[in-house]
Length: 277
Ligand SMILES: [Zn+2]
Ligand SMILES: [Zn+2]
Image (cartoon, rainbow, N blue to C red; front, side, top):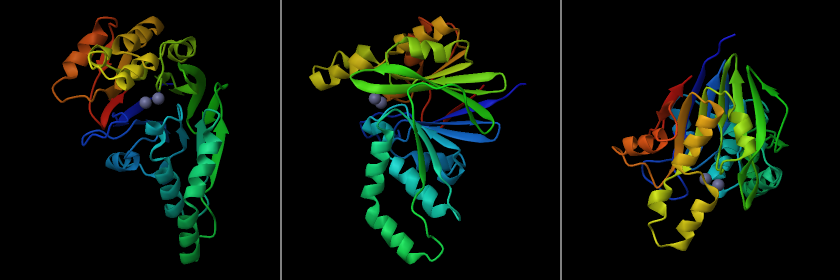
């Protein structure tokens, strides 16, 4: 069976606020199933631009609990809740710790939940969130797609998870933040595409600020991501989570750095850049 997978880079940014880049988030649509990977700053605003809303998400997959990847999880939870005419639990996959984060978000929304339940006669339930914590998984069937999770290496942030989404004979791996590691290699093996967060270590290392230098310890450089893609026989490498920010016109520089290590297609683009495999 053939399947088509659409990958939309909803947010290509990083923790540094930028007027052009939303925070890390990627939408994956295949066979009528919609998955959201990470929930960075402005995720629902960008999702609206491609006709996706919180209520239409079949699942949210969190790669890790760094703040920039979950900034707007509260917005996803609340918006889904207030726009659903009947209880519609949000299926949320993430590493251990996810339940603690969700419980704290719901606690922070306690006043809001009280206001809305008190105001709307037909809204009699609180935001339902079904949290599934994992670091690796057998195949999960989510609608028309199959999802596999495997551990990645973003230490000292631990545990962290990458995902592989399959539909028919197509597969895409989504790395999140990680250095090259065996778990990611497994997810990537023979995949049509790899969506990888990257940093330009050549630029970062030139800035004499230790807190920035630290960023290089636990992220993949463009070359690292390219080598991971090449080793696994991936067809298309999709770069995202650009650090520093992708400056329009500079796409070729990022692409060329990847092309030194990877002979396949390299996709570099701003928020809402879409790749279909
Ligand atoms: Zn991170
Ligand atoms: Zn990150």
